[in-house]
Length: 503
Image 1 (cartoon, one colour):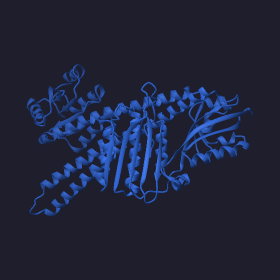
Image 2 (cartoon, one colour; image 1 turned 90 degrees about the horizontal axis):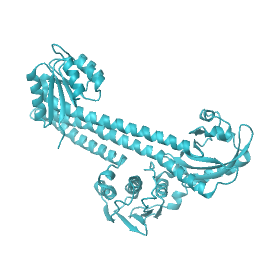
Image 3 (cartoon, helix red, strand yellow; image 1 turned 60 degrees about the vertical axis):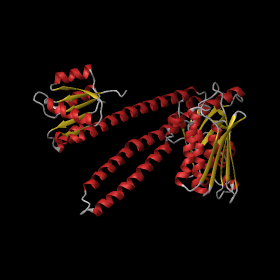
Image 4 (tube, one colour; image 1 turned 180 degrees about the vertical axis):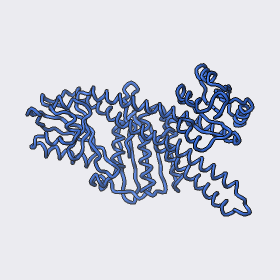
């Protein structure tokens, strides 16, 4: 059953209140309405039965709309407040909107009331959801900081010029230098390193750039009180869209007293993986926020533009203004295309279909998208995989498919694409094949990272994050085959993983 809206009407004329109610009923809104015409009754209603919406006249004999707006902003600032008045100058209307009013409708144009109410209620829901999302992100950031402080290692963010940012004060205990000295970029990690160890450390970085970006190195540093410490450093390069190194994300340990035990090292790796997951979760939240902005704000603005254009078109006389009517019709067709593109971009940014319909439906949506926008024959052979993976793992699998199919449609120019998903030997194997132009895998993999792009790197990294692997076979003129093997986790052992790497 649809819940009834509680509407509070500030109006001294009962007949005007009835007209408002009539317009809302005509728009199929379900509600209960109470009318007040003075400040005492208004305050009592706010306190005893808080409304979902307030409609207020601007001038009343014993009360006025601005005073009602001020009281509403003080007691229930989240409730939409719409002025419904007989006469309101533009300056007065703008001033009331600045003070917190949601909208205004003139009494001689009550046909605008229902659309204004629906829009105000929708915006109120969007604001509440946005505030909830911001609170969730704030909580996630707080958890991340707690995680960093609990790791028995120094967590850092580094750059190719050897400058570093440290995430906590454990660096001071280790080296004697304060974290702020590094943040100012006056002190670089190179300034602490024993020069004899520099060539080996540089070689490890070059090797990581040629590979998947993961690095491991050991070197010595000199502390502020002139002690020599052995450092064990592990991390991951993060590449930008051009294939260059954006930054390093890693941890290092004081290995002076000997190598850590195998168990402690495995635990640190698990913690590092979880830390990377937290960092990348923030990225997925940002994708979702952008998706909501596109869908809710830009999409709605385009829809309003379309409706107003349609109203203009209908108001033109076909016998005298046929050229303008034709231009309006062409503009409406173009707006439909833009709205469709915005919706598609919103879906690509945040795969809400995973939560709504499951992994199989989401992958089928990606495959169907090829046939929708390109003349390509496709096949989709699949077994039931729903329930095998956590939502976080499903997002990574979705991103793997998204990257593969994006590269096929962008570069391969195929006539046929086939996708097969099979469950065997405790793992799920994904096969994606096309008969397109193909490429030399060895040549692409051997390129310098700045010219290689993120496609293959992101593919391999996402497979690794799921504890599996991705392999690519291709030859120029003979198509491409991509096989990803992802182990099915045991529920009790499943660890949280990062929901995507920008690809």
